[in-house]
View (cartoon, rainbow, N blue to C red):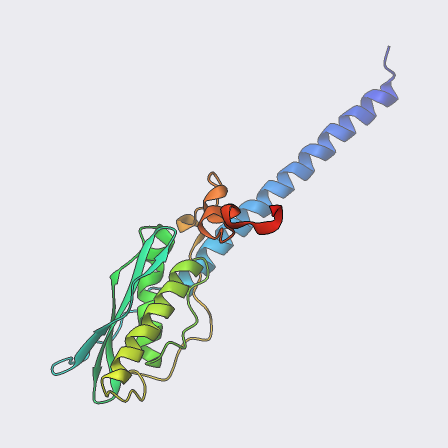
Length: 192
């Protein structure tokens, strides 16, 4: 037969664990709400200022593959400045689609391939940057001297893909390994 002391201890432990669980839930919910508000405020999609591209020459970079599709950059150059940047091909993934306006804005402002990219869309950022470098090289090869973009002020904060656009469920863990597997087992000479 349990004593009154053990019943009191039991009640105390149940109440203590319940209180701690409630505090943890409240803190978690408040942090989640705070993060979503901060993320949305910092990631307002950039709107490029329209510039007259009449008489500009357009150069399209090489297509670069990502696990979700190809990324291509295209630039228009007028009077030595990059006046327009587009992404004719965007990989088919929510982070890539989210990152497109940020990548285009960064390239347009700098007029070079010296861009930050977008955190959470790393493959797309790297592919876009490589294609952009190729388009700039084509422009230089055809006699264009590029001195910059439409502006020199860029945000110092690197844009981040919001969690709702990320694929963090890790259902297909082997896809990244297969994509970057450069080791050909058939050519292994160690058995000779």
